[in-house]
Length: 171
Image (cartoon, rainbow, N blue to C red):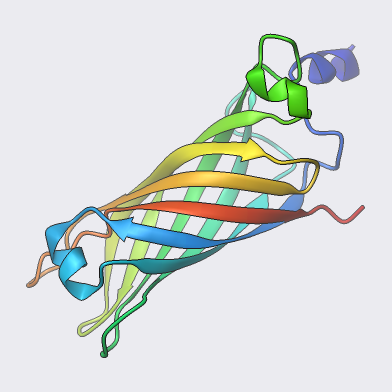
């Protein structure tokens, strides 16, 4: 019975524990962050757990690096978040992505952001966005990062990014 219920929720065909690497570019939304750089590189890693903490979702931890693309000096941001991913509709005729055998999903997470600058500081933050599976192992995501401001220069890690990722599922 539980296998049938799991299949109806549109759960993945691969093991629920998997690792994802992502890379992309981000545009700052905060004026003080724009003063650091007009664009940022983004690299991230996600580990999806076998047990979800919220029914109908997938729980994963994410570690990202946001690095500036121009100028000198030290400035990096490392968001570390616990996240939940929710899929829309599965592979059925009501889902526009079903034509390509892909799933659309939304995700949201909260955690700590390490600002590697002078001085180094930690701030509370979050991330959220939408994603699209592009086959079994490749995904595209639009991600919004938001954080509390740093002391002194009041930089928020508020940025919008586009990522391409690859799932390593061990099979």
